Length: 205
Image 1 (cartoon, rainbow, N blue to C red):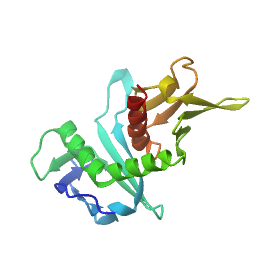
Image 2: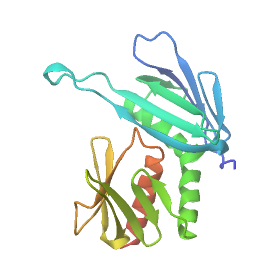
Image 3: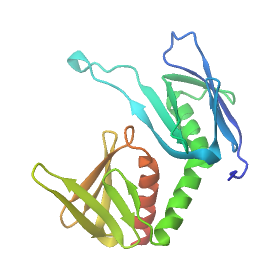
């Protein structure tokens, strides 16, 4: 399904400031193109993205990098990795450029995935990401232990969320040890799950 029109985004990406190989990223309502590879938006079934920064000796941090992964219906993966970017509309700084790229991804891909998952949940079909399963009545949290695995259904009015160090947590307000942990960089459709949890929590009052 082609999404409504939105401004096409074009960005020249480099892994680091000295990288001589600039890769062109194009995002519009029909396709996403990167480094001579093309993926139709309507065929993308999963995405994940986030920021990376490592600590080395004496609390010295490495340069910040950004990663975006897209997966189509045939399980082909497009990996977009960069440290520096320049948009065709003008350079607004690294964080601002990254935010604009993610905003374009929302219109091109993520909004459709969120709406499809939301409609399925409303129809009684659970939506699973990592160890979280979303249902109309609440969120099912799967806690893995050394000796056993336990699953808890937490009603939406008893559920809460928090963010920390690239992770997203959903937990029970009355029993916080009942929780699931999702990593934005490593878990497919974690960003879709986050939007859905935000929606259901806002509706629970």
